[in-house]
Length: 115
Length: 113
Image (spheres, each protein chain N blue to C red):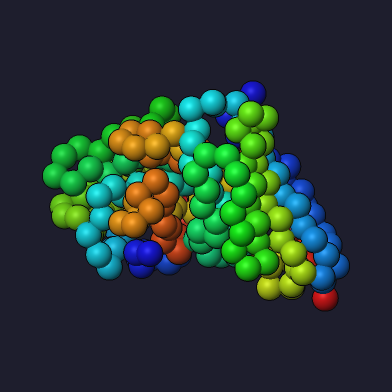
């Protein structure tokens, strides 16, 4: 399985500011995803990070709020822009497995609290 | 109606008990079924992976898929306190854009020593 790391692991931010979360995979992967997990709830897909092109966003998520970059096959960033307390959540990146191509492996998550 | 339904619990069992966790789904296109374990303050960890209908066993864990009933289960035998976590079922229709996973809401399990 791929080993996925995220930075920062947690942060406390002020309303109106932006935070960029980094996701690094220890090997090349085909697909990377960003999820949000609100307290006590399951995972909601934000977008698919496409290498070298614009991310594909799910309904309810827009690029201006959650810009995503994926400059190569092992790295991606998610920015949470103009934050409000409603953005307080865990943000997770995942990657498609190289062996089990139909499933995903997850990073440890970034816990964000917006005051 | 959600695409994937999972009883959120919480579920509390004594050590050594057999645990049964279940999900139902509505999308007949789902072919790949997974169970993830998520410890508090950690990312989900892939526990079991099954393609189509049938059973799969790995140590104390058994995953069952019944596509005709649109019902999947995870059984944990001889449960241990270290099994205390939230268990998420997930499923997908397959390749390409269909690789997107749809998750259940998760079942919080506590195994009491």
